[in-house]
Length: 411
Picture (cartoon, rainbow, N blue to C red):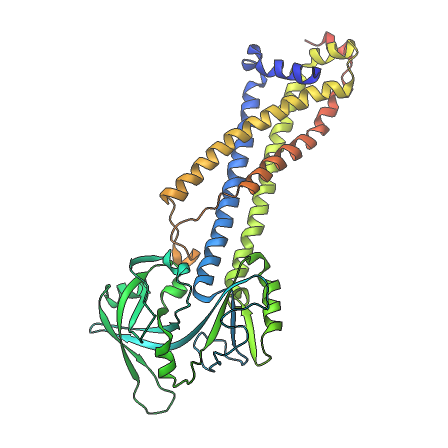
């Protein structure tokens, strides 16, 4: 039998321990550990959740890597057409990690109704377009059916639909300017078949999605020319590496940009969350450790006579220290259990009931997203136990300074 563990367990379960002087201090230490775990788990879940959700939204409208003509034009509107006949299309087999590629073309226009008008970017897509990414944000209607003959079906955002006072089934005029000066604009009559709401104001206020053949006809592109290619990758964590491989694989007349490069400011803002998460974890571990150090010192002072008796019976300093370290570890684990239970409960409530809302103009989402990352939670728990226990070795050193003779006289 492990003698140190046995004595520590008896100390924890002793009835007189609950009414001792150290009882409130121990409770405070447990509460501090629990609050620290709650803060750390929620910080990781919300921070990672927000990062992933924003990445999903940006990639849903742009793919992970954009291949376009090699020029100085950085706008979303397609200017220089690309041949549809490329070695990497419709299957990008030369680069591992690419899951999908699709051809798109964009054209600036103005939607005009009887009451108002809005400037938009008509994003033309083909039959291979990855609608799965947009399905999550559809609030009414359906996605356009692009197979077969050219049709006028489009989807727009709830933001635009509300401003233009349009609903599913309505038809509206869209005006596209020609490149020739002093020429009448092209007019297209589109039918609204679906409305989406991504919560990403930058996209919701801009995009109308429909058949790519409209853009090709307006621009007088021949032989199925397109504006750009959007590439999706399997693992976002390897985006930069795959992006470099894609750039090396495409012809020198084309260029490729990752969405991190295309939307630099957004992704730099997201990286700040990593720093915030690390800062919260460090602060919470420090606070929890300080409370545990105080609790351990009180436990040692309260059990001075017991320490003296054990030393008088021949117990080594390290064995006595282990008793109190076991005791402290029990308190840490108890705080972890409470902290995990409360934090996971709060996260599940937010995940399924979406209690906390966020302003989309500031956070690009309408509700606070959470990701329950089990490995990260286990790492937080293991790290808390290890760091706190190791740091508690320092205050436990006071046990070696306790004299058995003085301790047995201590009252």
